[in-house]
Amino acid sequence: MTLKQKQYINGEWVDANSGKTRDIINPYNQEVIATVPEGDETDAQEAIAAARKAFDGGEWATMPATERGKIVRKIADFIERDREELARLESLDTGKTVEESRGDMDDIAGVFHYYAEIADKNGGEIIESPLPNSISKVVHEPVGVCGQITPWNYPLLQASWKLAPALVAGNTLIMKPSEITPLTTLKTFELMEEAGVPKGVANLILGAGHDAGAELSTNHDVDLISFTGGIVTGKKIMQAASTNAKNLALELGGKNPNVIFADADFELAVDQALNGVFFHAGQICSAGTRLIVEESIHDELVEALVERVKQFKIGSGFDENTQMGPLISAEHLAKVEKYVETGIKEGATLAVGGSRPDDPELKDGFFYLPTIFTNCTTDMEIVQEEAFGPIITVEKFTREEEAVQLANDSIYGLAGGVFTNDVAKAERCAAKMRMGTVWINEFNVYFPHAPWGGYKQSGIGRELGKLGLEEYTETKHILQNTKPEPLNWF
Image 1 (cartoon, helix red, strand yellow):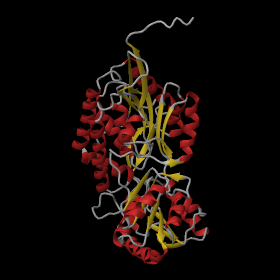
Image 2 (cartoon, one colour):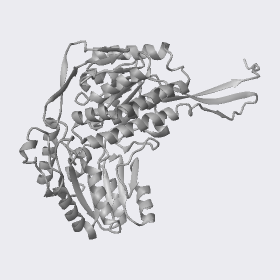
Image 3 (tube, rainbow, N blue to C red):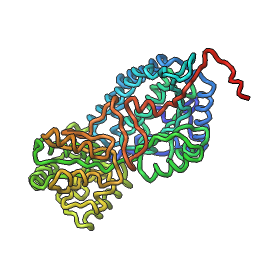
Image 4 (cartoon, rainbow, N blue to C red):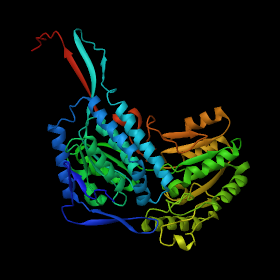
């Protein structure tokens, strides 16, 4: 592997100050695939200082937006060029199928291309002033130094949603990827260096969140924190960021409903119910794990799902026949197992799955069978808590209003789906569902032009789209009096 297995601070590839390292393992077989520095708060402080210096005194923030866009476009081009290497690293690191990883790389390149394209489209506007002989304009400026913390499930995809808009807006940044899946982010920082991102503008620190990551939240030289991850950590970051009132962008997950009406295309609904959950073994913040099904088709739909699930091919992400890979770690596997135990204790019916596979070829990996629970109600922990695994809970409804009420019965509001051939019904439900994204006869579709984020405790702010760029800008009003005269009041 030619990957630089170091941190990237102030334009230099460096080890951790402590000298500590961490082994990165393949969740398919627990083999060590890389050894990287284990940074701490001192590494973070150095990266913050470099980013602060580069923002306050460097060329990046004042560079024409078109020039920043050209550099970001080069990054996109390099990601396309190195697609296979990046996909291989992502699958080694996360266990997902390499075909999924290839799709991720295409999406990631698309994100960089999108923000490169709109880099110079956010120049501001002239607005009307009540004062005669005046010019009143609104301009958008970079926030400053941005701390960016990304999760382990979609390491580079989530990084791209933060890196691309931050860079085109003229910010400097410190990124801390998940300590267990840093490899594609490391590779992309190599590509950013190759593309000509100036020294100190983009910095990469590695290590655990409570060491390296926490400093980004508390340090007063950081102007913005963007975090994607769990709700517990997100709340801690909010508290820490309040010490200097940092800007915040938080995506904190979801428990996403997928409402299926009896008049839906049955085969489509079955297919999308599976697609909505079992890609990447259910380790998706937008997974449609709460299936809410009209009672008249409930039994038939569950039977169809169970039969399909039993046929899943589970295995190595590099086997072209594999449909679902492992969970990310032993710790996460134990969490998923506990979640299933809870569901059984709560009285839900286990329709399929609910255990590790017995295939001896999978014994060294963190595998868990795709699982479906029926007879679920909203007072159950398994219906309310995010499992982040290959698990569906099924609830019933008889009326449209009941379906919407069930869908909204959650502390989360990230995304949801509605399957029906009645357009008016679909629009009514979408209007009433308290979520940042609602898909109609579709599930888990993202693209760079559309904003992504949640209602309620699913987070603050938006990524992607023009709103994703606005998160990395401050808005300033400038009023110029072209013929000033004294008031002579005092």
